Length: 208
Image (tube, rainbow, N blue to C red):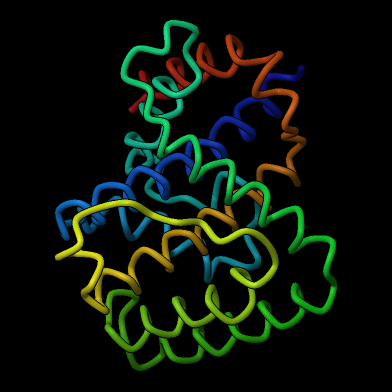
């Protein structure tokens, strides 16, 4: 596999993993690192990048995703989270259904364009923008397949702001899965190319 292709695939999968990890964490604590959140969520409005590497900037804020990828795909299985595995698998599954539905893709594109216009007046962290992202996930993505059930603290999961951030992260994860597929990522790579992906993730992580 060409190095550039593998770099892009691992970066995109790290973005999926970071969305899953952040959703896992906020569901438990209600807290989220703003820089790690923003690098994921900004990708939703980066619809015309010059290259795949331009979608996630600054790239070093994906470090959590690279670390999560390494833990989740390492042969040892040490520290692996069944829940994060489930979230990643769910986002990849929803991406397949989304890309097969031209109507859903078109609707999502239109709704994301609305958010981009909204960003002329608000920041990416504004409650109204997050609510808009969350509604895109609820209205367009979630109905496509089996719902991703995020586990956590009932006190946190009952809060609307936490619910909306989780849905926004799942939307960003599906977007990352679209990119992963576009740069050649396939499910079989998660079984047959695990070692190469982990090795590449470690190399990219060491560049930060």
